[in-house]
Image (tube, rainbow, N blue to C red; front, top):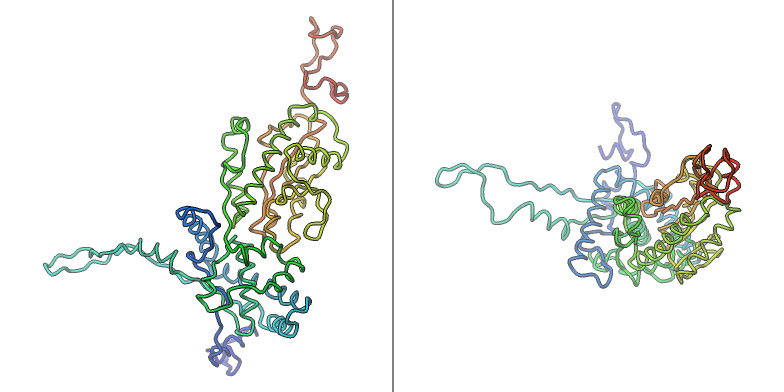
Amino acid sequence: MLRIFAGELTHPTVTIDSARCAPLARGILDRELFHRAFAFRGRFIASPPGLREGTADQNRQALWRRIIKELEGLHARFELGQEIHNVTLRCALALAEAGIERSSMTSRAETLETIGPEQIIVDVPALKAEAIRILARYPNGAIKVPEFSFNPVKWSDAYELQKRTGYVFCPREVVPIVGVASKIVFLGRFGVALAIEADGYIKTTPSIPEAWLAALVQARLIDVLASEHLSSKRYSLLTVRSDELRIPDTWIQEDPDLPHRIVGEINGSLSGGLTADHIKALGTVLSALYAFVDNWFGSDQVTRDLDDEAMLQAKLRDCFGYSSLSVAEGTVVGGGKLDLFVADAVLVENKFHGESRAPSIAAPAAGMQGRRYAIALNAQVVIVVLGYRPRPGAFPSKSACVTIHSIATGDRNRVEIRFTLPYGAVMPFWGTRRSKPLTNEAPGQNVIGRAAVGSRRMTKAA
């Protein structure tokens, strides 16, 4: 069969539809086997400094379970191989363009284009462990389940984290660059950086050359923070906890499920988590935004007109300034002009919209601002503040103005937190009174609700 797949033999009842299987079959026949470019294991997952051992183990287990769950099926592993192949090709071309090992990188890029993603193989060994249920006959003639000195299920759990190892295989000539691309993909997709012992386990170079990382940053395949996590700060990311979002008690009283809903949706989009510094900065930025929303809803801003996007941005800039947060406005970060970059960690995009029935899905491309890098750890969270004119009779509560969105289907470690702020709202009025007026209006004149006093639009609508 291998010789048929390799094209050396033919058979009248076997038709080979794909030409890509020939080099694979020929490699097996000639014993030109693939080599390990990357190894991943639960115990290899690097932990952030300062974590207690118990917390570090819990973080490793949570990250490892996500990896294993996502790579359960053959199709999922093939898709990951495709992603690694794509990133590898881009890395090789970027390094060649930067003049780093130009000849070898060009040759590797040509090899990658020839072999295709089929020859980047992600393999995870199966894990099958069940309680022993086979009956055995004892010397005294009894037949029962045998007693062992160890629990096979617990042994399996220990094996799962300590010994079970997955690999990325590829042809020998592209091993170095595939290893680098695998590290980039695992950091961006799962939030996982593996300790140096993972490299030693498969006898590969433990560190990525600094010149390579600098060229990849220059080509915007990764950002500076990601390059640090691949070299000097080699540790994995953390999931967000509800208390770290700093949601005000008044909001929780209005919607007790709000913290659990928001943190669940954020972690659902951030499959790998955030850095500890980023989580701290996110909490600080969100705290300032909660105060901004409270002030917005507590003032007459909800019934006043909002001129344009520039006015909204000015209000946001002042809001962060009052909280003593650093704000970069209109700067070029990652190759494009940003609205606001707050606390050196969080992108804030503001959008101006007219009347909308569903403001949470208006301007759907707003959250794409952080996708200028292939891997950008300081652009995983994009906050979108959208000003919109609500439809008559549709006025949201403060807790309902916060929604969470995934950035894109193929982007598993980036999330949009959206705040929708109503302006120019038509507030309800009390109606026509024909008896004693509550104010100085003449009998029969419309009496406007207190919240709407001063709004020309309210008076006209009434």
